[in-house]
Length: 348
Ligand SMILES: *Cc1c(COP(=O)(O)O)cnc(C)c1O
Image (cartoon, rainbow, N blue to C red; front, side):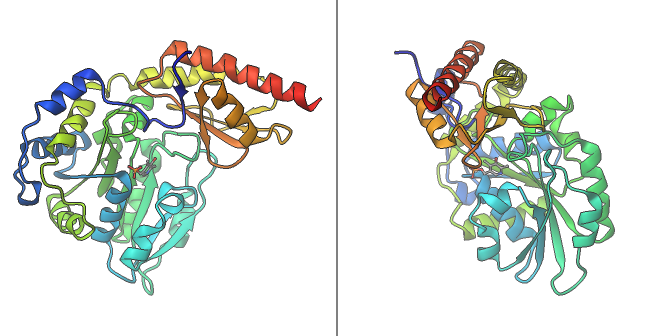
């Protein structure tokens, strides 16, 4: 039996032998008192990576966004975010229910972009007051698209004019930088805060980081404690994140090539409508024609050894990551073709 090809997410990667060795050797201390040397080193490197003054290690990307919003806003303030954003769709609306601020959504187009004039219209000076605009890059639900710096700058200017903060949910900002052939720091230069995940394409087992000014991070550190995210000897996991950032960034282009290859191989198969957003990074999306039941497709394909996810019944997502080789992609493409062929035969 061949190994399972797990394309459900880039979060499914397991720590490599070398990462485990680094974790085993991690120096640790009590992070509550700022005494964990591995966390301190990780935060310092993450701040450099994003070109911000300071950084805060947190257990998850969801907590990172939550802490960012709790730090930028007061109860009664308003947050603007994209209709298809992770914050608006996959975080239990936690920031809003816990923080007591309201959310105003603006439409993301199929590539995750937001029309700047929609943002201008959505900003409110009072009652409630818009405090922060959130952008997502790469845009998960919109094809994993990389949002170019020019888009960010245009929206940052709108925010700045009005004294509004700009937060980037950059769970996969490393993928965006690689796809746009730039570095992360320049891509997020116009943002007041940015969050990114070590546990996605970078391949660490646990953790995300929130970056911003020194004052912002000092305040965020209090809010992390408030939501129960302060850790003790967290260096054990931070060392995996450090290893991921320092070893796995340069190889992300490989995941993007594999995603392109997968998209290319399944193009034209019966029932498959490739996402018009294209494939900038490591995520491949397609919609299945209604004759091919999405749930049946997922379970048949899974029986053949390929797992995938999706954002709705007929909308399938496949993620390439560091545990997926080119050979895996070739095999997955054949098994997708086989699955669709069998489904077609059964229905006729
Ligand atoms: C995964 C993800 C998050 C949340 O990260 P978790 O570590 O799963 O909580 C936030 N935003 C985006 C865009 C994501 O893809």
